[in-house]
Image 1: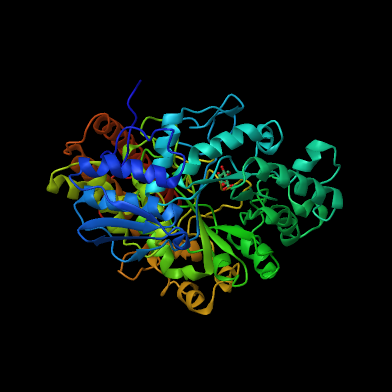
Image 2: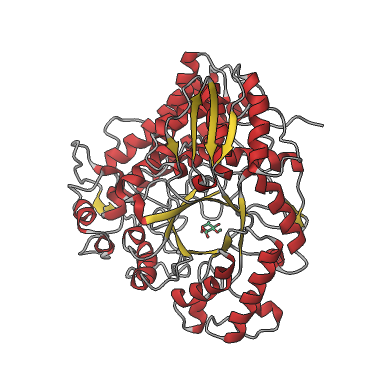
Length: 614
Ligand code: GCV
């Protein structure tokens, strides 16, 4: 049997045996083998159910103890092992997660494909249903538990017909088996459901106010929770990108969500409702409609109308996981609604797990504008797949690790998470570890520079979302335009423009309203500016666009050189080198396409005389 990769847990044994049926079993097993390997005595576990997911590690009479709730002792065990492996002191005091629900949303389909997946096929689906290798799923469970992720949504929010079977009678035994495999790791399952599913069962409508529809869902929820009593809930993408929803029946999203919420409530289930609603059939000629405004327009008026077990899951920015977006105003406008912040680990717009892109610095910057107490849960679109190393690029695992750390504590220092991951994953000499850490820390800024700096979104190739195509979306549906012409680029989203900026509370509105106070990184998100606009640092806008693209490629080249010198174990060394070569190719393509695009439009030469193709 092949050995399995252990990502940032190489100091643990190959596999958690299947006889570990509870979190405390897993904790005992991991500690009993992990501690001696790391030269430490095995601590004693004490369960205090009142501590829930919290834990405390302390010494008494010369012995180390881990005190915690059922899941807490597992998290405490991993925290202790991690500290030992990193050569640090274990965390002090009682540790508790900030967000109660720390979800991983998997866009896996029963046919084994993964929407926007860049790490191979699904780890648990193939051929129309569940098919999985227990050792790999246990290893995944261990990875998730080691960073405190406690919910996994098994299927794509675009619910394929086969996936509707997951909650039907024939599908429930398999769902239950998979839930049992992850339960010892404190991970509960969630299922994405289609709003129109009753229509598969002879009900002529999916109108949420129709008693037959409500009755069908209530009965289904009873059956589902009988099979999987600790299911975390249902996740719904409604009225979004051709998925069915309440709008068809003239009902609001509160009416739609609450009907489902009532079905799952008796079982303690959550109803997670995505706020990714916009007009995906927008005509590009329509300059009145501004896509980033859509979620707020739909949901802010519904604040206070959702049932207590509804969680409205909002993407972190108003568009769709672009390299740079302001915080979504919807997250700031709904004080009486339980919200989840949605992030994306899968690098859909950020390099497909080919280009290096460590996300912790981005999330931390986001938290600055987002009072985290308004949000009760956090979700991230998974970057996991069946590739040996789980994440395609061996370094992309930093994002799963970092996400767990962020979900546990959104104030976590991004640098600390990145350093920890590098230290745990590779035993590199000091200078080399530092080179890896610096590459990861700078990776987002580098990617942003050679792709779409200054808040200039959607310059990617339509469909795949990898590589440059500045006008790829320009004369299309989807509501994603840069409106570049010979004089200017960007969309005026100020009060005098589309009015998007008015969706923000006063302080942010003030910051974004004027190009003088708007951060450079978001300048073209909020403003339409002439190419000769003079920026704070004295450069013209067009010169800044050229400079960023040239500098981004130079920085990527320097990063590739630094990383080439690392004594990484195989196959990581080869995999990282191959991806870096692809990244450089991509970076040069972006530089040349974007610079030529703007030069052709503006006629402006590069002040430094560098090569821009005609
Ligand atoms: C799951 C974007 C992606 C889609 C994704 C969608 C969503 O549009 O390109 O693949 O669908 O977001 O988040 O629902």
